Length: 118
Image (cartoon, rainbow, N blue to C red; front, side):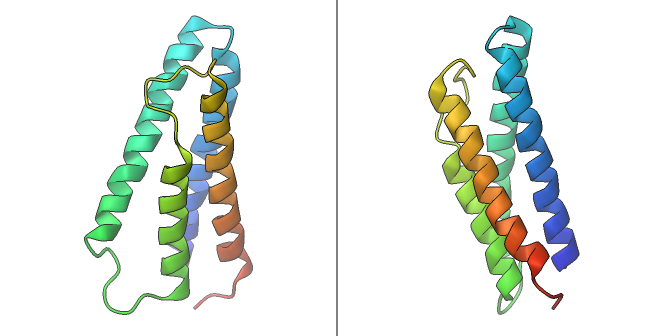
C-alpha cells in the first residue's frame, strides 16, 4: 500500500512540475497559456475528486501513519491551489499556487519515502 501511495504522489509531483513549465511558457505564448489553464483546472479537479474518495473511506479501519500522511498531502495540495481554475499563468497568484502545490507534495512524499515500509 505504501508503494502505491508514494507512486500516486510521484505522479502528482510530475504533473505539478509539468504545470510549472507550461505556466512559464504560458506567460508569452497564448496556446501554452490556454493549455496551462486547462491543466491547472484538471489537476485541481482531480485532487478534489481524490479528496472525496478519501472522505468516503478509501482506507478501511484504523489508518496507518502513511495513509494519514497521504491524506494530508492530498488535502494540502488541493488547498495550495488557491487560484481559480480559469486564472491565467500570467497572474502571479497562479505561479504561487503551483509552487505551493509542489511544496506540499514534495514535503509529504519525502516523509513517505524516508520511512521504513509498514
